[in-house]
Length: 260
Image 1 (cartoon, rainbow, N blue to C red):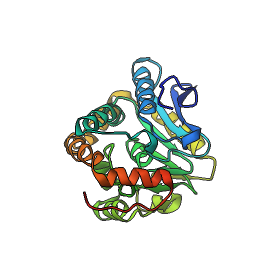
Image 2: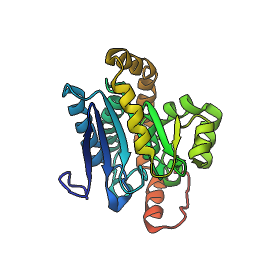
Image 3: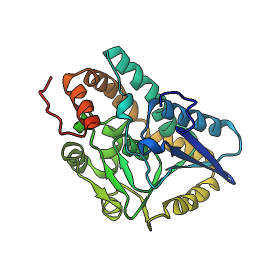
Image 4: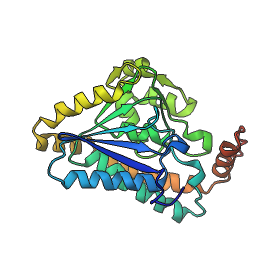
């Protein structure tokens, strides 16, 4: 599953005029964001940003799931250097989504968990199905939230609610997520992509340069957060608790953390 040519780990591209729909498709892992899949998404966004025809992007997941988070089976980080390299590669995608020229609309069906939630938060607009579920959950595997979430989550819902989501794994369904500002629009089940396309088509008709500058303005505070995130997460990757968390997740048992 770690081969980038693996046909069951892909980003599906579909054009709707000036809007490009990118679908995360990794069905065996519920669209978990394995590193090769993140790199494929980065490449697709890079192509779209220079093709001269794309004016907006919709990001969604296949099979009724946005993304179940990171691919735990691929988190074989042995040293802090490996951890920092993993974060460096991931942050290329984070910066492209947050600071790139193209507005991005997330269409969320089903779960957006962990890194899946981080990915949604990097989008400019989030459309959620009424039964979509949002949760952080990083601490369950001995890690902190990443991909910019320590900055993007409180920016959307405030520090108090963000702390609650991060520390207690609090979940929000579509309408409740709308009430606290975690998402921007709620659609009936199965229609998040339809509504997201409508929003993206509106953005595609707007002047592109002001939107690009606006994205960069909002992303200014993200750089400091990513630098700290790289240090903290790289250290956490090689802790005994992180190894225990990953092993427990794969064995479908409750982890026993020791604080080391």
